[in-house]
Length: 133
Image (cartoon, rainbow, N blue to C red; front, side, top):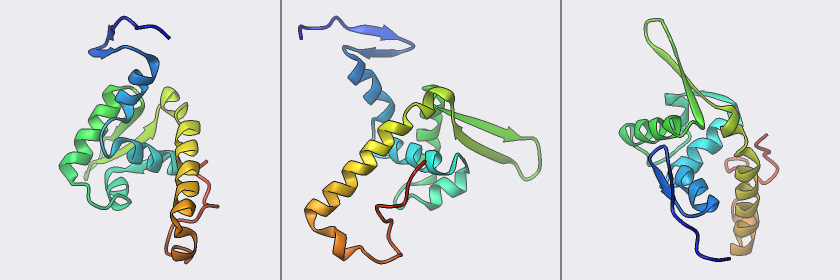
């Protein structure tokens, strides 16, 4: 594989397709946000935040805006009081589901490698058989 010339499109600068893909996953929270939305198909802001310990409202809003700008998440605002906003994966975002499933499967194997299978065997923890989609 030789050196690749830098490409730039829609404000994104990258040298290879993997790098472009990682711009969508970049940061601590984006893959986790995508994972939660993929599991439920449609989530409200508060539902996403409830499933993510440690993220602030401001950071979640920022990450959702970036995912929306990347075209992988859509936001639907209902014209009602109080306002209701729902997030879902777009068609191109849904194509990330196999990647997210593979990342989850790797996490299952890695947890087992670390010796966590017995430690986290109770129902209060996510279990390996909890399929995403």
